[in-house]
Image (cartoon, rainbow, N blue to C red; front, side, top):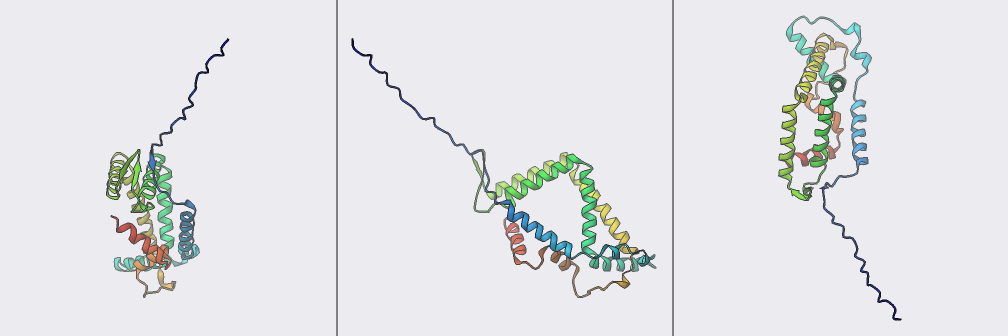
Length: 215
């Protein structure tokens, strides 16, 4: 009795179709967080003692509008970091009070940071197998930001919080007598704000210039 002819079984390897859904060259978050932590520490190190800011004996009513404006200018130059912290606290409180606006802002910020700012300009953005140039990515992010601003209350919320913070800063600056403060009149106000976060690090300016050159 002849043995049955074996049936050949062909083992076909399953083919894996690697379809790139989203290809985004995202750098490591550790150096980014380290950089942010360093900038924050440098900014906080430039802050003035809060006891000077709220010293009740230094408050007095300005004699005229010009004196109030002069006080605001001097106090802003001296308490600039403290005033920025006050503005940040007011803005943070407003956003936390509106979770949807906070989520929208975080999503938009994350999209701009990871899809444009941190992405090298020579590496295209690939989403669902389609390649987008640097200009197309910028246009898409700008359009998405515009739509989010129009359909949500993010912009009005931020503007309201900033205006409230500015009112608080101006009111404090007008009534806080700066005569007991050691002001450096040789330091321009704009450079003072730049030095808060730049810290004299040339990489800070070069990073900003590289982003602006792509716009």
